[in-house]
Image (cartoon, rainbow, N blue to C red; front, side):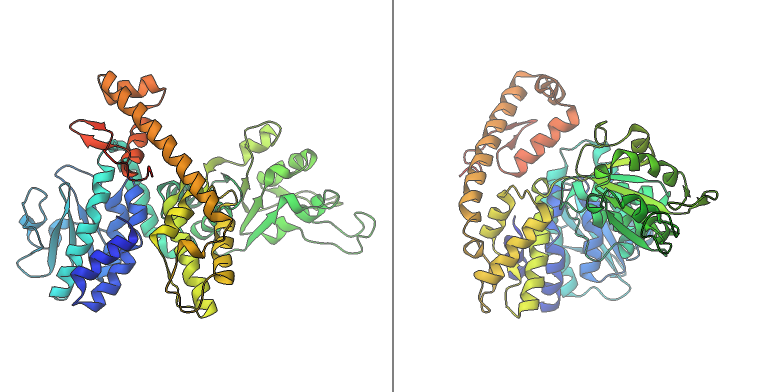
Length: 497
């Protein structure tokens, strides 16, 4: 179900409750990320609580499933037994098709498909509007639980742990960070853990994937969040001045040094220094950076002892940092844990969320009515290779407002996108569909010839987990459908046109 379909369903059921209808929009905009998420209960629960305005809530799964859980609005775990009728909250209890209220009319539990239920608790009164909203949110959540049900329990448990961490820290994240896809949220959670333990991190990904936003999140979530955040583009440092700009220099250190200068390291003292494109630093300067990563620094031309430096350092590169031709081995070791950031073309939930955000931003700035994307525009944008990642996506939206949209247009549709995008997108979409259809046929053959999914994975040369993710993606995109304990090809693949 697309966001537009979900909004249509919400309007059909909440037409008499305008306040709850508008609240449902905030929940609906996260469904794209939840469909792809390995932990929809932990992902969607906080959004359900926020959208409904209750005091606590979340999703409770089938008996023995550890992925669900309830939390208050601050992200603190809540004991389900403390919310009301124990029978109502027991996963084994069969509920009616709509909602079920506890005896004190403060807790409501609604079936959400696949043995899950949405639970909301309020100190106020559960009126018809809140009950209708809960039913809508639960019904929209059902496909998310079905999509995740094929994943191994360990994968879902790990994803749920990341979601709970991110929910607790959400108020400290940069306000402009958009993280709806599992891949980016996993990188964000990894960076958050490194920041909380004051450990260095090395962000690896293409240009425009959001590495600097992750670095800013690292600063905001770590012990140096009250100190400065200094970003340095190492690729733009003039080679002759790079050492002086990083370490600073004393008066007379070189010709023209009429006075001393504090470098970037000193400017970031007690804070975080972000070394973007660290792989572009000359090899001699990489060697001089080693002592700084150990906590010591000396300005160029200084003859005294080294000074201790309490500065957190996080680095980023678009190249392979484990390639000896990119980074010295000893520098690579000091730069810490690698955090891979996936390209935007592999994060469709983030593509949709970012495009929506920029449509609203440009529409508000230009005084246009447009605030949403149509499904045909979403399909084209998600099919683009987006070599420039977020920067290219933002430019596409800006060009649509500059050349095609009029002030009265309510949505950005496919016809508003730049002309050069549309034929390219159609070719890419067609090729992607053909490749996915071929992949689905191969997967079905492997499953039919093997004794189990694990055996099919071995024949394909995949790990079991990777093979199951492949199946989950093909099923989500309409190229496979469940058939007993296996999968089969659907009569008409959803995206094979």
